[in-house]
Length: 195
Image (cartoon, rainbow, N blue to C red):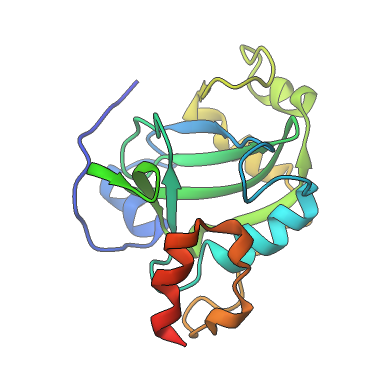
């Protein structure tokens, strides 16, 4: 398994990252569990999370691709493909650009994962049995952040259906359209200056 230190880097496409690492698969594939008990995800089904979080909020300004984490975050290298687990299914994926750890807690969070906005996609949910058919060593979904063999990632991609990507990658999304229930009060207050 490969680990790297968080670094400040400019955004690059997944293809540019692939050319840099010189392979036909990502350097790593990780499963990141999402908790339905998190404030922004409570009482939301996977379709609502896909639509409102992955296709609208995550790619939106002022910090596109930024995912705040409260505790552990993710130890992973740039170019790692992250598969997002929600309600015991994989519902989305994105390519990790960098990891930032905060010196002091920011809005109750200890750091941020930054994803390449152009790599964000949602798809028809993928079950544990489908994951196991591609990665036989996979034992099932849990709160653990699984490492999967990146050489098998192409097989995973081939079986995806219903793929959607964010549509407003380069346009300014008005703050009024952002659902503030997904943010802490401080983060919402920080957004008001854009109005």
